[in-house]
Length: 257
Ligand code: NAP
Image (cartoon, rainbow, N blue to C red; front, side, top):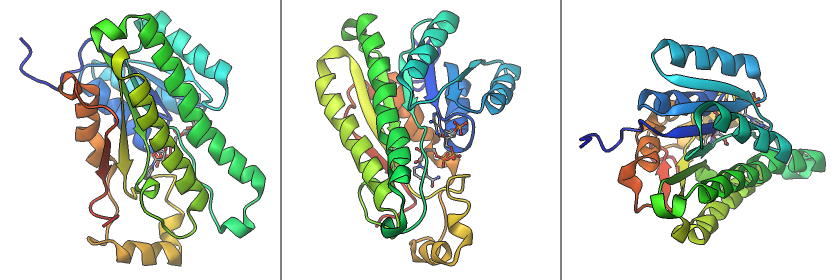
């Protein structure tokens, strides 16, 4: 018997938005726990470099070009994952973007661009993954693990974040509703709600005066780190989370208090 409940050996994971930031970190963590990982995003060179690093450390990784807003691209990514590693049983819907500025100044095209990635992209990613899981017998195996990377903005309003927050609240509720729909089909859907973390997505925000003010308002006056999400991810993808579905785990160093 394996005494490590967070061992992911034998699992095949697809991580979207793995070319930088949180997604790159999470993909490496899954690989470190023994999962075969498929790294998806639009910047293939970054994915190839990450995959090479994982393989050099003894893991199994494959880079696939993926645009989560494009259904054909999502289907092709799963096809390639299956061809290389077999069926995907662990899906991390992480790809996301932010738009900056006041809603009154925001071109509607920016609204559409953000929703296409943060909401439509999550829907396409998890729906295709669940379809294949169900077709491959997840009902009997109870092996489906889907983790959506949402945000504390899904729960708490922050200035100049209306559209981003709406997309994340939508992604969280999408995940909860699908957790209910797929509860008897062996597919668990859970959300991680990170606080503000220093990545490409937030780098400009926290160098501007409003960002510095926001940082000062946090209880610990600091950003969270990508590695703060490791434990929650491993838990939610593992056998230990067999009876965890529809949950939202907030990891924000108290920022949303
Ligand atoms: P990041 O470094 O900018 O990474 C975003 C990732 O999404 C990149 O790998 C990017 O890859 C990918 N992506 C964007 N559009 C895509 C598309 N159409 N198709 C496929 N991939 C796409 O930002 P991050 O901070 O790590 O963000 C990752 C996730 O965490 C996002 O969902 C974000 O909302 C969430 N989050 C971040 C924070 C934070 O403070 N940083 C807090 C809470 C939640 P390509 O450009 O190569 O496609």
